[in-house]
Amino acid sequence: MPEIKKLQRVRYIGREFCSQYGCFKYYSEHYDSMQGKIPILITNNFFDIALLHWAHLFGNWNDDLHYRNVVTNPEKFKFHLLNTLGINESEWQSNWDSLKDYRDQRVAHIDTVDKSVVPELDLAFKAVDIYYKYATDRLIDLKETVYFKKSLDTILSENSEYYREAAEVTVGALKI
Image (cartoon, rainbow, N blue to C red; front, side, top):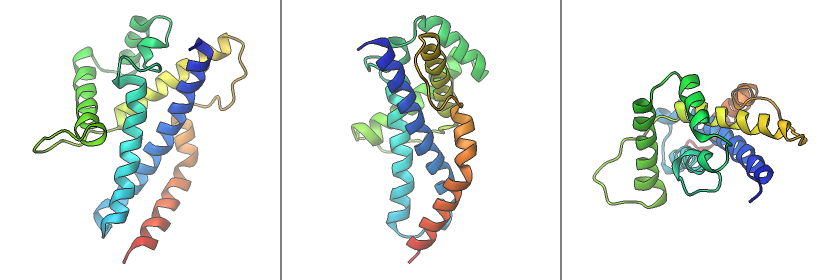
């Protein structure tokens, strides 16, 4: 797949991750007050889909969109990623393992395990945002037209009230 198409898909997956993460974040504010299975399924599905999007970009080295298969210098990108996140390789690996294990055990393969620890998505969001910015900047360097030049963090912030209100309405409507 040509580089431009991959970069465009990275941006698409990044925005999709952002939407799922945003919905999960605001629906989970209501998690303890939700009753019945439907609101909890909705919240968990936002998490699961966000995690699957993260896996395309960081989880599976064989995925076309994994950063190692898209960026021009993967080692330099990873150094920048870790530096920007303010973590070391060991911390990255620990976070990566928790996300990948949960994806394998509870989302993609439904492995036989006694219990799983649900990982945090905050660091994953920041990593996806950094990769999204890389893809945006690279497309601009290649003289491609780029819409939505804002960072994912900005997009999330600008849509936070919408996500919050939608979560409150949906959860309220589903209270039985």
